[in-house]
Amino acid sequence: MLTPSPTVYSVTELNNYVKGVLDRDENLKHIFVTGEISNYKAHYSGHLYMTIKDASAAVKAVMFAGNASRLRFRPENGMKVLILGTISLFPRDGSYQLYIGDMQPDGIGALSIAFEQLKEALAKEGLFSEAYKKPIPHFPQKVGVVTSETGAAVQDIFNVLQRRYPVAEIVLRPAKVQGSGAAEDVAKAICEFNDLNGADVLIVGRGGGSIEDLWAFNEEVVARAVFNSRIPVISAVGHETDYTICDFVADLRAPTPSAAAELAVPDKIELVSELLSYKRHILELTKKKINEERNKLLYIEQKEVMRNPAARIDEQRRELAYISEKLVNLSSGNLEEQKGRFSALVAKLDALSPLNVISRGFALVECNGKVVTSKNKLSVDDEITLTLSDGVVNARVTNTNEE
Image (cartoon, rainbow, N blue to C red):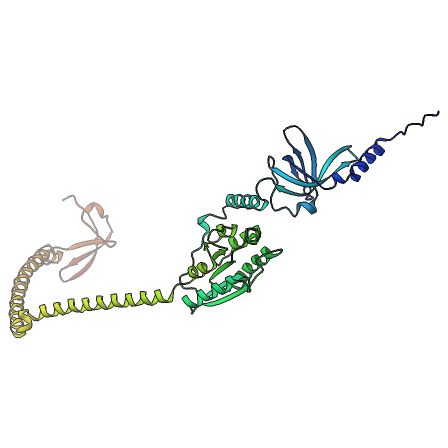
């Protein structure tokens, strides 16, 4: 009996054969696996590479970009997950791996994890900081509303605004608030209001629902649109117990859409009451001022000068006459004193005048325009000028003596 020859495989053929065996196994086509993520790496292409392990073993895994784009959370090392995928072999390396089709956190929902991850990231950037919160205007002329035009929330908001502050114009920008594309539509509506400067304050939100229903307001695109809005934003998403990322970023969070409308505008009844209170206060202040001035007038009327003004005028006239007489006396005495001092000064000046000296037979000698006080300043033949009391004489020096 002849023994059949054994089949000889190349490495490539062997790996492809094993891959075919794995791919034909129905139990490995849709398999659930639970484990912990390690060696996690997000490739720039969008593919996710990781190892799934438990206490005793590990298996390589990959999630291609198309499936990864549908994840609601960001995988992390150490995270326990439940995976739906397929087992196959990568022929080049000869190792089998888990191809992930869908993945959910094990124990806590993916949306809850995604919420906490985005909340933590935005908080680190400062998007929740009180330093960036803008004040809500006290008397807005235009109130912008971003919500579904068919939901109950829009009617609640309109009813409250019209009841409380009917002078404000309400501008509705209908937006999709649930499902695919809702977050982008809400963000676009906020940007449109800012581009057109279309409101003084914005109410952004919707009525209650599950976390999936409210998820558009947990998206990063909405958070950044709210943060970048120049117009103050009031977040009004869901019920009082519902919190979204939009609530943390907004300038003011309202527990319900109706409450948002109350926070956006003043109450006309309260305003009227406040105005009446101001009116009463002004009237009281006016009456008080009038009484004070009246008392001042009565006090002045009781004074002697008001009851007998002629006597007061005569008294002031006598006082004026006394002061005038005193001023005249002081002026006369001072004038005589100044006259005496002036005469003495004139006499001194007259005594010192060179003209008086010349009148007594002396002469003023000058040479070249300068006064000569010594013979040593003259030489023979110098021309000199002699100033006498009645004229000037020109002369020439013929001789100088010591005495």
